[in-house]
Length: 88
Image 1 (cartoon, rainbow, N blue to C red):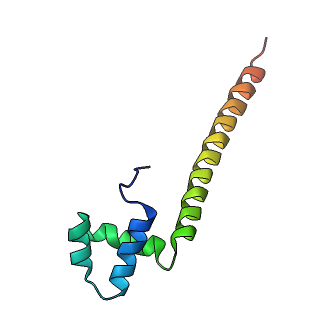
Image 2: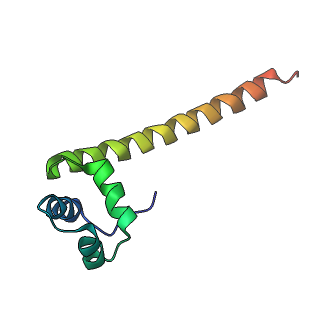
């Protein structure tokens, strides 16, 4: 997953600026991002405060780690089944 160069507080600040009436074009130009990036942030983080956003990122990281652990365990399990299924 690609790391963003923006912190949670910067994303929240940009979303709040748009809510106050500032145009998306101005905000994206100032931040040096594409408009679609802003709309993706809005879709994903709308209505969240800084603590909720931080918790979401922690949960996403934990989910990624757990998926990797599951994939490793499934691979080990398949390898052991293949070894046990061979006739000696």
